[in-house]
Length: 185
Length: 268
Image 1 (cartoon, rainbow over the protein chains, first blue to last red):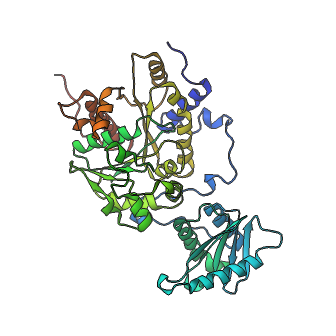
Image 2 (cartoon, rainbow over the protein chains, first blue to last red; image 1 turned 90 degrees about the horizontal axis):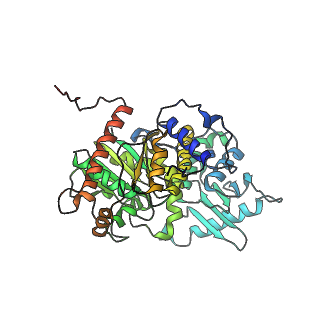
Image 3 (cartoon, rainbow over the protein chains, first blue to last red; image 1 turned 135 degrees about the horizontal axis):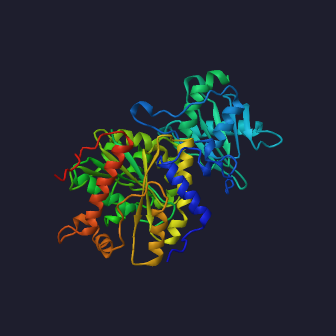
């Protein structure tokens, strides 16, 4: 009886947190001052928090005011959890990149990707215009989508080894691009 | 205005789904319009109610095909209780489901679309501190932590409390700890009693109501019904959830500055 069922440090931390979280103690309690026993991953969830929504009037994501392509691409890279991101203009030129960029850049890749997308466009008219591609190579995975904005028609945002390249993240990035595009140009 | 209550714990098997469902029934039976949302990619609520894995449409249809959230709500035999099931999600897409919930605003928009004139939305999360739990806490008003009154579960308490603290500081400043609910309590068992002694000494937010370990829970799960739907009169354990709903409603009223409806009793 009365043996301690958990490590005393963990109990103390949990006890203090529970008291703080239900308002019994002020925010700067002992746990806030104590050194954390935990390690954090670089670029962990803090960098891209979920946007809390409170109702119909608050369903938009928080939009950033990016002024440079590399800022925007660094954010996009983080959003889809890729190793590199780059933007390709309608002529197939790479106009910005971020992340683990190869020494020779993405120039050739950008042009080839634009070409691949234009070829896929005419594959089957019933399927509509191509919006995104995911290409699996032996060594890397290349994903990209078209920014279907009136002022950004033909621009492609592409990623290397993206883990979270979903419809939702694409839409998130497209909304951000729409917000920032005039300044980025 | 509805109150979003997230039921969460880092350890599995602590009674989150059992609590979510039975608490929802208790709130609904006292006339509160209530929705239970099954966020568990395994579809725990459906399994609890003895449904096939792909039997109900729900949140997955909203996320994948853009179905209206209101159409995904499932009515129950209680007029005040509805369920938003997980939906017909292929289990192999669990990673995509989790990431979409975490990295988009789909959960917030879905809840906002269905909670008009709803008093309580109970969000049943999977075990662990992963993307679904984070997404739920980011849009929740309150966190309710079922604590299995056993040593291993108790040892994990600091983890979930740390995540709550982090989310409140970084993502959702409105999030409050509604309470710690001791479940599967056995006061005739020394380790369980030791856990309860530790919890009762100095932890904040511990609810007075405790849920005992009892065979009736297995009986209810075999039949696929909440406790109060078992035949043979009201079971004492079902009464526990009525008490829990009283306590939670009073606590929420206190935390949100609402006057309690109940007048104090007078002895003479």
